Length: 456
Image (cartoon, rainbow, N blue to C red; front, side, top):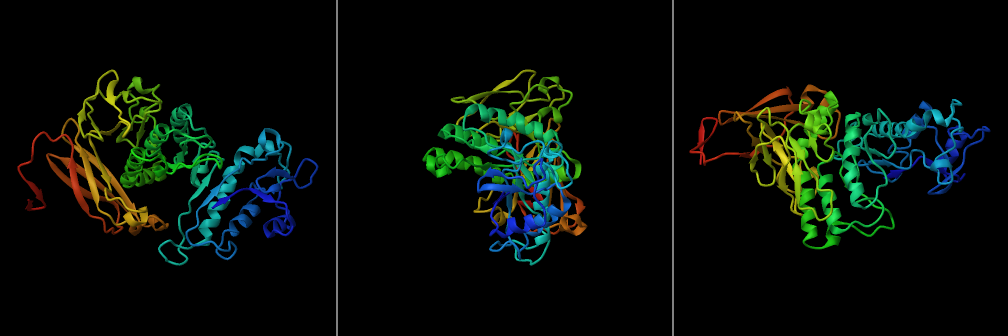
């Protein structure tokens, strides 16, 4: 549900009436309630810098107060810069005042974060469960357009109203990388562009890169044409479906990266120099990026481009990489290499020395995938070794804070042997290992042994 900070000026609207009675609205320089124009017409704006306002706002999301809502309630806080259509720079005047009589110019950049925080805390207090567990405290999802340092504690953010053109696709990558290394981990851009109408090729390429960015969604202006994948027709629908499938298969990897982000601050999406700080050649690269330490993505951001010049780092250290599409092993060089980038996919490479867990069965929702088995993609390094982690919990509650509520599994591959080790937590999960894919194998194994049993 989209919930904005402007409240329609209407005494018959109980939210407006109660906020007015409590003196919760921002004031103009004369001390009167500030009024500005936004989607509902003449509106007033809540002062989210006030703790009492945030508490009251959060209470409005309770199951009792938010009539008609269900346990599965997720919120999108939009227009929260705050946006004022008839104001200077499309916001309120800088001399507007908070309840504490502090000018707007002092807290403008914090306003959206405080609103997102109030919404997040309200959803925490409301309880509920998508699995029918009553009043369990669930992890909320709150998306915000406006943000500040610290917003990563309260939810996801995106880059705002972009345009459906190749230049905005291209610039989205360095924008998200900048936000990621600033501590904002759950970030994304509107896939396909908000304003305008993307061509089938542009939408496909944007879907392909969006699938490898932390927050992945398509979003468009009311006047834009419909852009569901099936609208473009074949062969575009199948190409777009393939991009979306690549995202769903990697969800176990993404979830593990977000666990590391939660504990260490390491950004899931990161510049190449984050993991290859000794390679000066990567310092200026902003058209490629890493997903975690084990995937390198080279998006296609130009029209009619079907090959890419890709720089694979690690030549001096003897790194090896594997093309995620063809599974071919590639050794880096001191200069970029030419890689095929057909319209069906973009170049993505798995780092040698890694083990990545994927869920290969495609279903109607992530909830339906919850108990599905994993396939491990083992990419040996130059010494034939690999290592990777998989983090699991119930996916919705705060039980992960307990030892019994989470588990971290580490996989090691060495001397043609794959082993697993529980390195944290004791959460019991039903998922099995369905398949192991070892990349770079030069000949067919003579036998495969599981424990002490030889497999056919």
